[in-house]
Image (cartoon, rainbow, N blue to C red; front, top):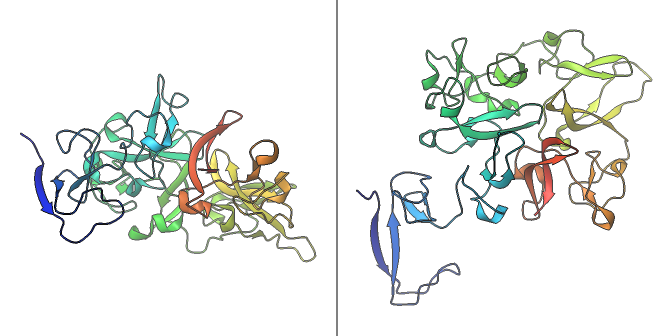
Length: 330
């Protein structure tokens, strides 16, 4: 049985620029119930159920695609063969946490790509423990994985990936590096933090750092590494020694994770999109492109991390065989 119903409304006073119906003719609306359902049985072929109405907004995550224009924003068309054996070009929705992966009914959860500084929305049924996700937020108490929005209950708490502390705020945990079943190696995870740990500065143990990452080594000294979604979030590296120069950090990859870990010149100030000739001109330390069309790029978590969302998008791309979310021109 069809899950949608059709309503005809008569337009009597003009219509918005996106409306192609003439005055006096019926505007047909197809109502639906399965939020984010694509095509039959929720809607007609090519349409998606959005807020109770079928709309032409692009293909949903994991659908086959040829270009970004085929996909529902903010998903992009990505060649998945590098992280899925036999993969093809699919609409991929990147994520900071499982909360970014549409409604739980879609069955998608956020999973990190190994050593890629990138996480993507992927079917929970294809990942251990292969259960449909629930609604309990990261860090909250749980008994079974099916309760958790992330689809994973680990050591009596819902475990999920994260990019910033605010991704974990609902449960009172913080975003820190921890070993979990989410990946083969430790990653940014919502976990209890130490009240007296430092956000920056020199360290000896992981417990010395708010981030749980005592892994940034510069000139023989080890410092706390902080998570980031753009270089704008990275403050100066405080050496703690009088008379020593203060170093400017940018968002980069550190042990496969996105962190404030790259030292850039104090003069580097170019924002995303600004024309550049070398890496040293950019706040991120990354001058992207070829020839005369080079511009400052940056690592990112979402389009908002890239500044002007009309001109730049956060897309998972490979440079030199290394995958990461980067700001690229649309």
